[in-house]
Length: 53
Ligand code: SF4
Ligand code: SF4
Image 1 (cartoon, rainbow, N blue to C red):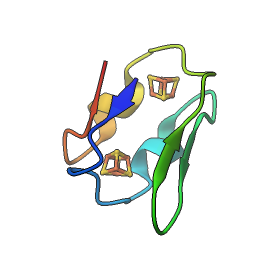
Image 2 (cartoon, rainbow, N blue to C red):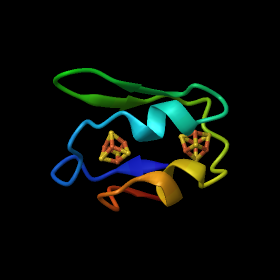
Image 3 (cartoon, rainbow, N blue to C red):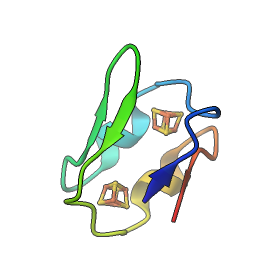
């Protein structure tokens, strides 16, 4: 999974729904770790359409 950082508003929804806890959202940035299994749950949950394969 990849993130378009210009669209991300750091709402933390993706981090909350990720089953492998591989998204970290801080006040300043969003970081995706290598543990992602491309399940797509975060992309479907993101209100901004910021997550894509
Ligand atoms: S695709 Fe799945 S495992 Fe990867 S970051 Fe999104 S919710 Fe987490
Ligand atoms: S759900 Fe979307 S807008 Fe919210 S923190 Fe994740 S990538 Fe950013």
